[in-house]
Image 1 (cartoon, rainbow, N blue to C red):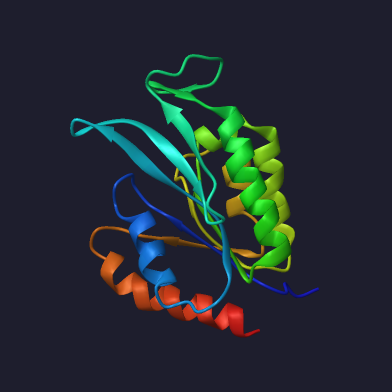
Image 2 (cartoon, rainbow, N blue to C red; image 1 turned 135 degrees about the vertical axis):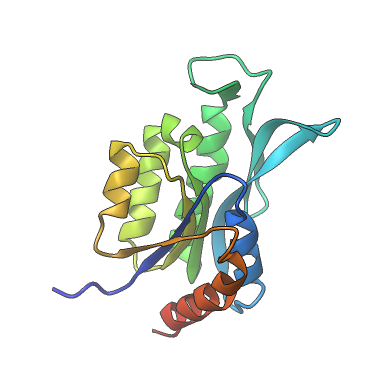
Length: 178
């Protein structure tokens, strides 16, 4: 059976511009977009954490140096409650109401939650195309996503990131026109 759609996931080294690439592509997309993105929390020019922002307006703290708890990634404590409250609900809402699901990012911090992993699978299995970022690291969950027949992984580097904007824009517009 042929795959009905494709999910586009960007991968690359940290700081290479994956999120910026998605933001630039979305400027060209005239469709209802749902999902979430993450952004740095900075204090006095120092990164101290990450926020998670639903495209529906919900916000939360994904991780912070001052958070204690069982889930840690490097120096950051992961806030599983906000990840699920903002991230999982934004994904589920996008599956129901949007023409494109944005998931920025699927990485180590996000893997602290089984509910989040289930939401990612639901999004990838849905009829709604996904545009997202996928951490380069190897683990069972990320490798399973890379291995899916309906996932196309594009690697962004500092040398190709500018030419990736029109390529990714055209692929997203193609998916939305189906």
